[in-house]
Image (cartoon, rainbow, N blue to C red; front, side, top):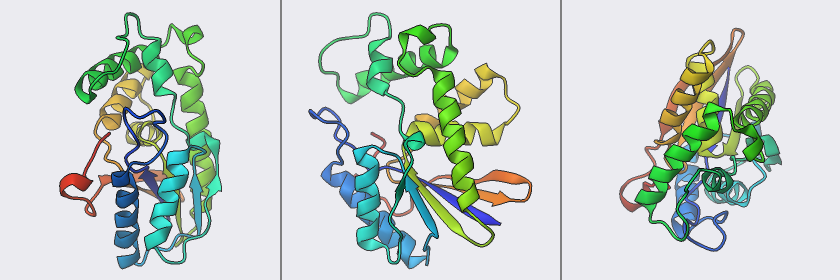
Length: 222
């Protein structure tokens, strides 16, 4: 069996002019993860990442501490959905700067509308298209995790949640799947690791959202 590690990016820059940049905490989270993986002898045979800056910087931060990691190949299928456009499409979405608590409230309402379908024309990437591209990239990454090998995908919370919801209940109806996705997505920790075992019967979720390398101020969700 092989193992695929799904790594959520480090903390991005909430409220800054460019969200898609790691904060100082985000860089430290990546380095701490690299230390933790190195101490456990994790040396992947393949690394892929999404095309966003926060994915690239997280991979770079990990490599500052980890040893023997290959350069990450870029696969845009691991990119996060455009959460700002999803929020903006929500009817009566507040304008102006929102604090983290208010943004989270609106975010959950907006993504519930997005995943429900019925308004696909209002989104640059409908929920169904997001799910399809994540599935394609996940399948490709699983093929990199050969017997006894470890592959790593550095990505975002929404993509990891999409993978996990499908693995937990492959036969779930669309409503149940979307509900599971939301539950997973709201609790993912920055720089956490989710393990997927890849064997003859297909991929199976082994652990979700591991973050023993983080404590105190280094533990963040947004």
